[in-house]
Length: 129
Image 1 (cartoon, rainbow, N blue to C red):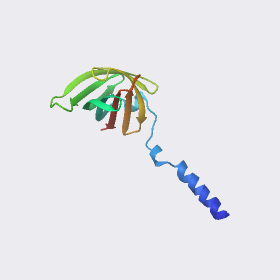
Image 2: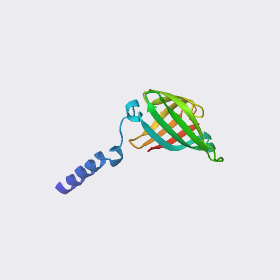
Image 3: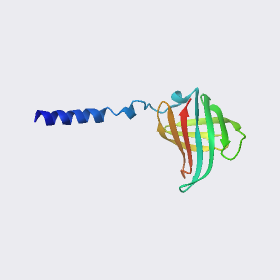
Image 4: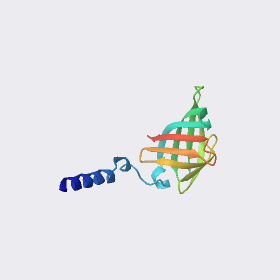
C-alpha cells in the first residue's frame, strides 16, 4: 500500500513541476520594452498561407519601435516606424503590414506568438534575440 501511495505522490509531484512553465512569464509592456524579436509573419485564408515574410520587431521604448520585413519572393527589405499600445493580452500596432489588434496567444521569456483579431487570418511567430 505504501508503494502505491508513493507512486501516486511522485506522479503528482512530476505533474506539478511542469518544465514548460518554468520559462513562462507574464506578458506585459515592461517585459518587451527594449527587446528585439525575429520570426515570421503569415497571412492566411482558411488553412492556406497566402503571404509570408521574415520579420523583425524592435520594441524600442514605451509605445514606439520599428518593424522590418523581407517577403518570401523578394530580396528587398522594408523597414517601418511602429507605434504600439498594450491592453491586457492584446497589442494594437500602428504600422503598415501588421496594422491592427493582435492577441498574444503564446508568450515566454524567449518566444511570442501573436494572432490578428478579429478574423484570426494573421500570425506572428517570434523569437527573442
